[in-house]
Length: 148
Figure 1 (cartoon, rainbow, N blue to C red):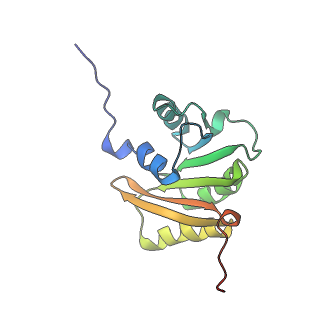
Figure 2 (cartoon, helix red, strand yellow):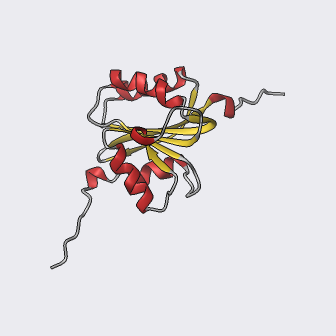
């Protein structure tokens, strides 16, 4: 008898997060959220050897290229201090992807504004059956061109 462990559709967020972050197999990736360890193992199974969860990633020192945050079933108020803490793990050109529960438009706007207050520019977003995500990069790496 063969036992197959299928991942429910609601839990398949790692591929869309990788796509939003434009991750390469060489990127150093830190994963945060209640399922951080599980997502780290999924990344490693997919060949992302430099993936770590916040539980085992060391002190923040700007050492990661990508931060993937699974913030489903958690409050937005709890996300605010987590974003401050996670930003210190990212390199100056690092990208941050935050995945949250399906929300009303006002909540989505609050997430975007929160990232912008922290010096990030929203690059992309996606809506999925199990939530929505935004990808953001630090503003300093996205200079605004001045009209000549």
